[in-house]
Length: 357
Ligand SMILES: [Ca+2]
Ligand SMILES: [Ca+2]
Ligand SMILES: [Ca+2]
Image (cartoon, rainbow, N blue to C red):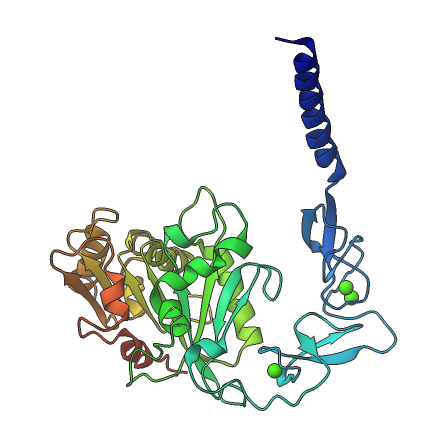
């Protein structure tokens, strides 16, 4: 090999080593603390680490003892601008020292966009609105007002989870299935009878290892939603497919008896064993309509048939507990369920269940 060629090779290699190292040493991770009330003091309980030089809504100190109480002489009331039209929702406010993202000083928004459902669908990255999850929010037409609305929380399957905490890229995966799919493609409401009744929140959980939604973050999210939205607390519902169905079971395992109680659930291709083991016949106090394909090789049909049969055959005074098992259908049993093509209207069924207050 000619000598100049070797020199050239060495130079290139040195060059490569030099630059990639330089790039890495450029990135110095620091901890940023959320400053919800924009008083320049950060919340020690809510932080993130990044190389960014500025993080919207975050500061570098952790000195705020109450991040909902602005520490400045003249705090201002800001109004949530869900649709970004510059007009704020007069009933969703935040006190802050300077303008929080997604909020405006104007309080004249008279309503959400009318027309197709996708116009009222909004996505929020984790920390942008809720600290527990990135999520999709759907609000029914005419939402702005004093009326309270049923809340449906939709839990996605394992394939739609955020495996590497990079929700900016994968939050759209939630729109592949279930109510978010129908809402985003303007096929909502699926059920004419149920109509455009629900607030629909679809949180995305982050985990490389754990596949399904866990109870505690769901609990935090639900309590947060009750503060943020005009929810009829006698009509809170969970539905989900596959791991989402398991997530429902996880929630009921720990929080079956906690306020606010869940008015009804529709788990599809999931497993209810844990919730039954933890609660026994008391699980039957929540109306359940479970669905499964009998040829499901991912989550065997017994995940539904065993616990539902137990509740039906061994427990007295339960609420409505039923299951629909599709013959010859594999894991993907939720498409035909949510779109109503098998003649089942899960949305009207949910709405028919209401807690007695
Ligand atoms: Ca603060
Ligand atoms: Ca403060
Ligand atoms: Ca607005």
